[in-house]
Amino acid sequence: NAGVTQTPKFRVLKTGQSMTLLCAQDMNHEYMYWYRQDPGMGLRLIHYSVGEGTTAKGEVPDGYNVSRLKKQNFLLGLESAAPSQTSVYFCASSYSIDPGLADTDTQYFGPGTRLTVL
Amino acid sequence: AQTVTQSQPEMSVQEAETVTLSCTYDTSENNYYLFWYKQPPSRQMILVIRQEAYKQQNATENRFSVNFQKAAKSFSLKISDSQLGDTAMYFCAFMKHGLGIGGTYKYIFGTGTRLKVLA
Image (cartoon, rainbow over the protein chains, first blue to last red):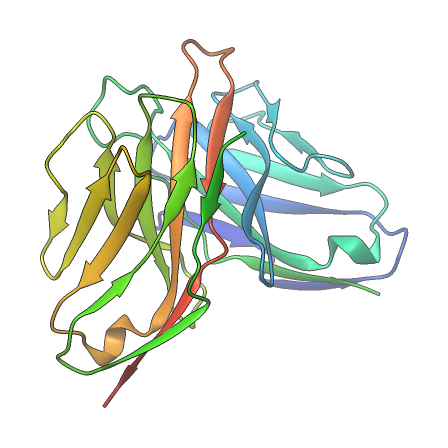
């Protein structure tokens, strides 16, 4: 059981380049999330998905797009990278955020992707 | 809007001692969840403990316990018998989900407290 995995672990881009970060989970979780972590700012939610084929905006969605074509995968895309998108990106998943179910709102995180945009 | 504040950017504690990390939050919601996550140098985020706002009893997980004061909107983490492996960044987080799939989802993290356990 690998849990949540992220590909790649590191990436350097030039301004204007595009790339896709891949998140995969093998826990059959319904919900998946993308965060960015910047020094002194904690984690901020970019986009999330409550199921296959669905996506929703989080706190800082601008400049990013996401897709959830398969339940186990959640892709984060940068169409035209900017230096302000230099950050560490974390993917997470959870079974459900239904308050009626015990301990299903706990998020399980991937190891992160360090992205540098020059 | 919900906010989560961790007022201690860095703390240190001697091995085997007890340390308390503070967290306050601001919300008008009545039902929500609170979490403490640990991020060691490996960067992996690991859940330490969770608390449902509707429960009055403070959550406990082995050496980790919380002091949840709902009226004061305070959610501190106490680490007893500190170990070198507890050295990490600790994040406090607030979660609230609106009813139904179309409901607004909020998962707000604090800025973190860097804890160093000294030998």
